[in-house]
Length: 201
Image (cartoon, rainbow, N blue to C red; front, top):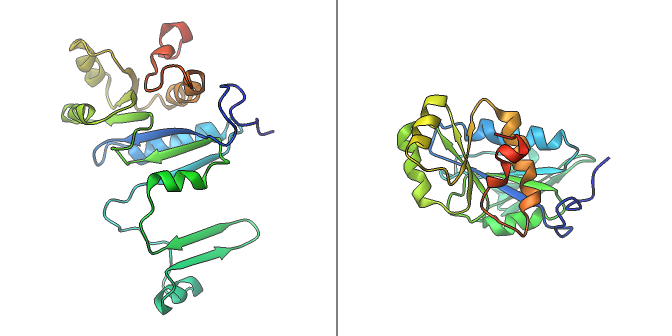
């Protein structure tokens, strides 16, 4: 049974929780995004996903389909609806904020990319050089490291302002992200509540 949105956290119905997965290319963003979606959905939550395509390479229409023909005929927006699915393809830019409004009735929205947005973020770190991205971001709640050595090296520098996770420990990451509900309206932009007291890390 689907829980009523926001009841545990005391947040408003109609305001989904948002988590971003950001990082440089080939740092595992899509894999982590899919893992979070699966983990949150397994809790009976209604989850939406948004992905940023900075190169405008994605294709949703297949050549020769009816919707493809409509687009080539001059339609700047095409909607295809079936009993169980709905797809809308617009030939225009949509801001992240406007897209999130489309998902107002969801419990969670997992966003891959959009580094400059101000929503809570997990930062993917595969190589040491990836750490420099942190200085360019806001609302970082956790860092996902690919190796224990890299995690230990980062912590040895004295930077413990963010929660640290290992890439393969996806269930722990899902649980920590899920607990962001508990920080709603308290200390946005940090996961420090998920340390020893909660046995999360």
